[in-house]
Each structure stands twice: as structure tokens, then as C-alpha cells.
Length: 232
Image 1 (cartoon, one colour):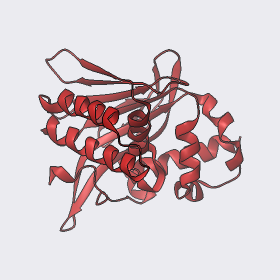
Image 2 (cartoon, rainbow, N blue to C red):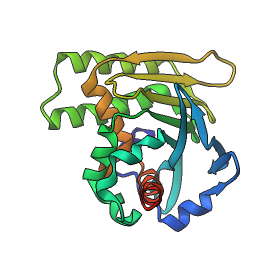
Image 3 (cartoon, rainbow, N blue to C red):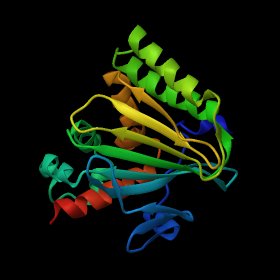
Image 4 (cartoon, rainbow, N blue to C red):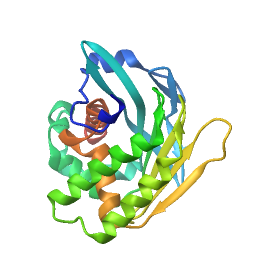
């Protein structure tokens, strides 16, 4: 069951369902009882532009795995003016829009909080599989990418994803690198740096890749909020 976390079987939820999962506060957004700050500060303040969950549905039972928050430099809007005036529903199905978002040279930060406990190795294998498939589809899977992905799998291998554990991905502006962190109650946070641009790009595509993204609730939320910003 847990091995399906990164698969295409993860289902989208309607906007109404997502709204019931989330409520806005002055400083936090609550996603399935998990609070996400509306801003985080890395090298500069980043705003929460999208949120959602990963889940699967088995025999009409929804099983939730993680809650996701996507933080972006507000300057990202300047790189998306081509889509000004488009409604969020249209943007959610426009993969070119999300390619532009991924390639925009602005800082991005993903905060992923565990809802259902799993082994870190299961998450690592799913990430590896999703990234490898995307690399292979574009003929970019070479020895360097294989070594980098093995490093990611090894990083998560010994971790146990207890409820409320946090994984973050930090993508600096204009850089093809990423910093991945894992933190859980009672243990010191662990970090790993990724320097292979192809792998880093495909990790972004796994979470931000439009219709092929791992969480369609997150994609819908991003599309709606970015559409609102573009209309200002």
C-alpha cells in the first residue's frame, strides 16, 4: 500500500473537498490538522502559494500520506505573465504553465509533513522511481544521475517517518542544486545536498509537474492562487 505513494494512482480531490481540509488563519494554513506557516524565511521571505495532500483511495476509503506546502518567492509572478487572465481551473491542466514555474529562476521551498507513518526507505524508493522514470523519458538518465539518486535513497534508508515528521526541499534561486532535510521528534535534523541539475529538476517536476505531479490537490491550489496573483 505505502509503495504507491508516488504512483499515478494518487487521486485528485475536488476543490470543495480541499477547502474542507484547509482553513486560513492570520499566520498559518491548516491542512488536515497540520499547521503550515504562511511564510518561511530562507535567504528571503517566501510565501505559501499552494498546499495539498498525497493520498490513495482503496475500496472508497481515503488514505492520506502527507500534507504539502509550496513556498515561492513572490517575484515568480513576473515570470508567468503569459498566463495572465487565465482561471485556475485552466492553469491546473496546463503543463506548460508548470514548466514555466519550475524553470523560473526564483527560490522555491517544499515542506512535506507526514500524516501516515511509513518507512523512510519506502519514500526514498518512490522518489527514486519517479525521478528515474522522468529522466529516462527524456534520455537524461546517465551514471551521474544514477549515483545521485542512490545518494537520495541512502539518505532516507535509515529514517522512520513518524506522524508529523517533516521533509523539506530547498531550491535556491537560479541554481540547479537542492538541500533536502528530514526532521522528526527527538532526533537532530539530517541534511543532504544535491548537485545534479537533472535530478533536482525532476524532483521539482514530481511535486510541481502539473498533470503529472504527485499531488493534484497541491497543483489545483497552486493554479488557483497563482491565477489570483496574476489577475492583480
